Length: 401
Image (tube, rainbow, N blue to C red; front, side, top):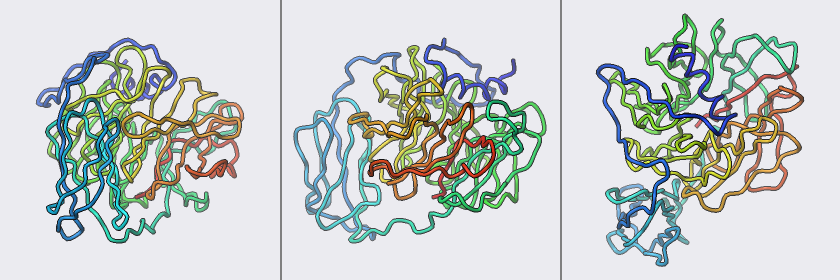
């Protein structure tokens, strides 16, 4: 079996099996290694100090901002220079800025160890994005059965209320895993079009200007800075330079890693990995350092998505296709809770740009997949978006920024 076929099967393996053996892939010529930190089941992490500062939108210091640190007894407050610090932290910690007079577009940052400042930008008033107009997803058109379909996946878009469903790709190959550029003008996806190789492709949001990056892999995730795409290849997480600067392997070949997603400020990458025999949610620095397990191994966890406000991570819990659910936790893995939905499973969660809604794939009526929308912090407010199509096979939704 070629490595390209392996890449296609990787997501299915991680989602539906929690007991896989380790794979150690080869390293292509001329490709740099990332960090190989992290044991299969790490012991007590070392203690460390952390500091940072808070500035307003023009770069002036902001004093009097309270900094809440999960698992820590004290609450630092920024001084006249906007600075704060805390000592003797251990393990991953969620750092949250709060103020009665300031608001924060990204209000929570995750720290994994010493060596990184944790800074926040404060705004006197904050308006969430108003261009919440498009959801991309992969869809098989022309299927005649809910249990079997031999049609290829294409990339489609629609509005968040399910209208204007439009095909953006049309090829005999499979186009999967759409990911938006941070400015909302482009979509990255994986495709085997034109041959056996599964490569990362990009296109404009309307489907024009299709381009093959020439990089083999799946599960693309565009960085918030727009210059990098994280992706899965041959059991590891990699980075590629959007502007042609090469690729870099971030994980070390221990376990099977897939479905990377970025923190909103771009300093961390969260991903799924079956290191140690059970698929958990892991997080690392964007250079591959400080690889840290967030979930507890009590179930199978995969397909993470980081809230744009920085405070929560959504992911798929469970490996059984009929019973998996979307779970949400704080960014340090604490306070996890499951979104309830009416008698069907949930996969592939993805946050809205504001951070109070999710879209996800739902498995209903045999093997039929639809895309659904849910209001995260309100009970039982949900809506199917693609159910008006006959025998829908829709998956992997991604909300435009």
